[in-house]
Image (tube, rainbow over the protein chains, first blue to last red):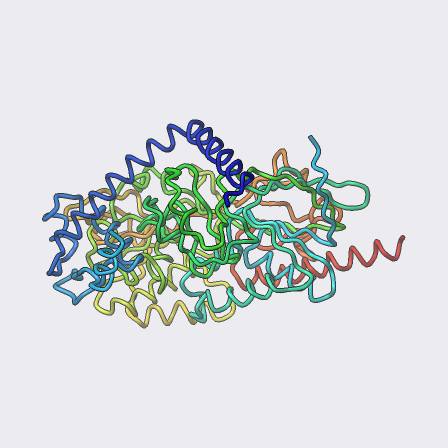
Length: 109
Length: 431
């Protein structure tokens, strides 16, 4: 049986969230836009690294992204287990997708 | 409105870095009830963010983490992290502090520190804890050894998508948390507010922070740390392993035009330490330190300096006049040799600026304690008891009173704890 108190609580929470979203409208808009760009950039890196490894300059050239930004993403993706470091090539290291992570992400999607 | 939430302690320690932790532990072990108020989300201060310490090259985490853990588990010590100190004044025979607990948007009782919220969060934010060389999430625990292990939700970057709330197994996310004010009443207080580095953006001769691969020494600490952004030494502009690294000493210190006419005391030694660590990580790299004087003042420091020279680190007595952007990510250092050979330029893959130390806290309009002309807190008896301030019952330790190294900071913290204990014991006898 439904508990009317729970329903009331849910409704009140929903209304409070609506108010909070209205108050933070501008912050939410800028965070959303940043997240969309990041999602696109991360997807491009993952696509580029599918089945291969590459250095930062190679990835940056391949996806048309500044090298410092590419390194920023790679360092972040490495921290969160999406990328692993591979062997060195000249003065640069190669990076590749972390395969178990790739599988896990498929499951999440 | 005056807060009604009043907490009573024997001593209030302002700042939870190594100085504050040491003072709190020394007092707590004597049976005094101590509150540590820290502005950051974790205790540990600058030291927990370092790679290693000079002259022993001990791991900084290995020294700091046990003290952080001991303080957090101590029956006589209470931690108040992520708090702002609004006022600190005498009241009656003691000290009264008004504190604001900033909202974490996470219930500290319910949170188990599992980081599920962080993993699911879709927004990446540049991570200042890693020198801005990688990202954290909009909700994240500041760093892996942080105490307490509680995430902070960064409202500026939160989309309110609700994913963290849905994922949290203990329903700890609270989007509606508000700042909470409370009062701490104590018999004594110890100020251990440490330092900040003079921002690189203030230094136009060295590019105002706009030249790629010109970084400050704290950023280099992160690059050198085993749990740093790259887990190895790479150049931030393109991920290249640098072949030539330069240190520019007195970048801000001993420079009236930068507002820091004093010597920051530790820059020579930490630059030598970092150079030695770099030499270990990149044995083939050229490492050059441009210096005005080497101040190796502590026990074993001169030997440390001589060891660095023996390892092949090059010391060039010169004042660097300016740094310009070079080709392929290099930085061009223009300097005047002090041996009389005149002006020269050199290309480096990576340049580290040893920026001056400035106070981490300004007591203005918060606390009537007096400051010196260098803006650090005044020690009224700098020779016989440097921890005494012009306010009775209020003591200072560590870099809050002026630049000093970790060894001196820890010693001074013990002294501040003893002075506070003496003050409380004398007050007790008088009553």
